[in-house]
Image (cartoon, rainbow, N blue to C red; front, side, top):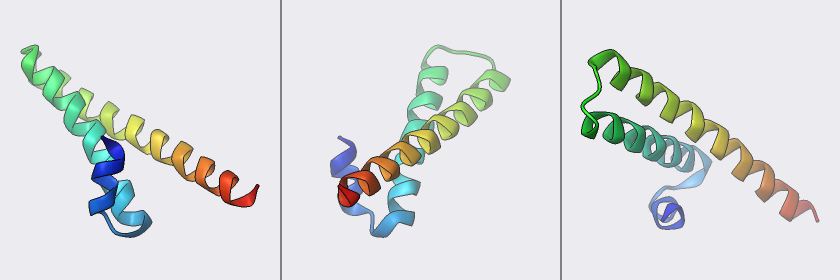
Length: 69
């Protein structure tokens, strides 16, 4: 699923936006569907961005490592 999304993004900046946005959108959707309070929805969106950024860092490191080997 993420590979398909990153195909539409150009370069590293586009990939970062797509991956972090996907995680944030999924976290926000889960919070909304569970009918959590508004402050918790915003909190889940922030958590989604943090998780997305962490996942992106891992992907960049793995890519750099595979190119180096």
